Length: 240
Image (tube, rainbow, N blue to C red; front, side, top):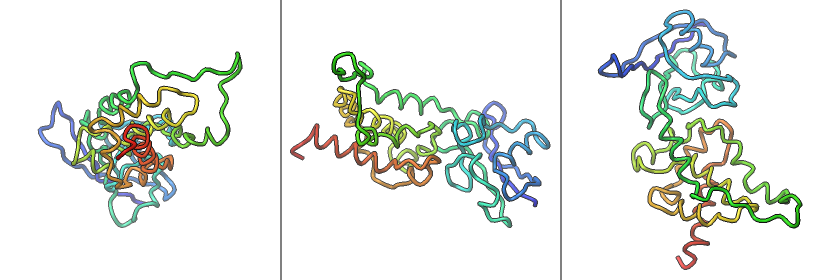
């Protein structure tokens, strides 16, 4: 079948303004949007820039905006979209554009680093010389968090990050903080809570659920943000 794609193009070194270019490729309904982009680059325009690596939804490299929804191009199939209409492919929002569909994720990683206290991870002491054990229920408190592949789709989809508060630390960083705050083996969780309680931190979230809707790993991001907010109130502001 013929698949039409409307692709965002912008090279800051040569273009004054972004623009769109149109491509048509031959693809099966079960092929991915990433396959279509590969065909464009290999067969029609070798200058098209985008990131990819594993191609199996594990590395998170090919995050982009497809028909106005943040997603991994390797997870979205041609049959997910209406055949009679073009598939619009754009870079993730919020982040500076390096070229075409490639964005600068350095601000994303800097905010992830900002949730860690200066002392780093401080573990509780295990009894004797044994392992620092957890029960299955204790482990389950943060099991969902470690599925994060740092693709930045959640931040791109977040209305707060987009418009309301560009300095917001973002859903991915809060999920990373949640992973340590709710780990029974870590004893300096209050320091992380204090970081999350700062301006532009966890309490900035208004519960739009956009981050949860687009997460390619199905992480309950909004739920975990609410858990951090509740923990902040219980531990740092018990009288509020």
